[in-house]
Image 1 (cartoon, helix red, strand yellow):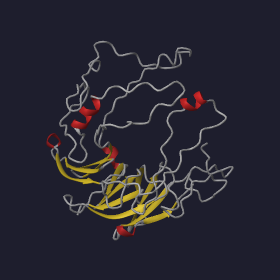
Image 2 (cartoon, one colour):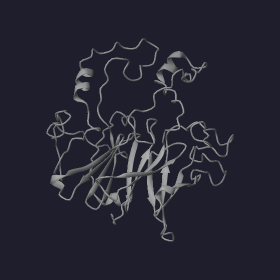
Image 3 (tube, one colour):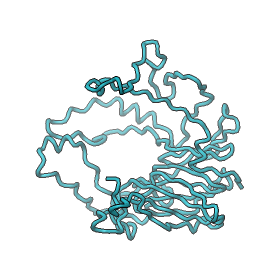
Image 4 (spheres, helix red, strand yellow):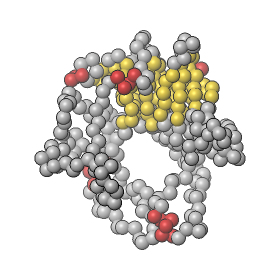
Length: 338
């Protein structure tokens, strides 16, 4: 059994350096620059200028750090190079007609599979857990220059944020393709099902302005009893054979989460989650409502969700609270941040 605990807080113990340099001189041209700091533009001798692009052979420049290892994503997570080459060989599509919104995504023909997107990291002793929209990869980092893949859990459903506490691993699930059985087949549209119509255009807005608003979101998928949006819990006592022991459903899924320990409660841990997906229909998860607070005080909007996890029986994990942390203390309005 793994004894060391790792949460979102303790991940910060490992330094991950990311340098972001932004220059916005055009935005500041009409301002008094004496009180606004603007980063200078990089000189021609900056080693970052002109770096070669590439999937596995991109150019590199570093300062104050050294890359010890670089591993390609394993099967089930890696890009499909053949599909990318076929997509890149397609002719450029014609520009949209004036006053019409741009097309959303590929419009037929081959699609480029760039692999699953890595999302978050958790550290537990000498083990690194890499969350991904397609699942989780476990790595042995006891020798940082010789990182080894221990195992992979192919389990789509993004966001894929991960946390570890003892022998339990938690994974955020928010995408519509998340299945209770971790299947990769998604949810085929049932025969004869009619997708809901897209939201109507604003009749008061000029067509050009409506088009400038960009492509609309696609309609939600049909409800399914096999879908999971919330938190997956795995038993990782045996790192080579993790076992899914629980799925906790929520109305908006989990975009990210934080583990919380109550010093007065040694038998349970708590998972605070924040979901940003659209509210699920009540036909898929009973009790879910996306109505405005003034119409439904039990709306799933403007809330976080708290899950209680009994350490001895994680399969009994359940939602115990949905606090309205955004409520205005003076007016009582749930959407107090607006």
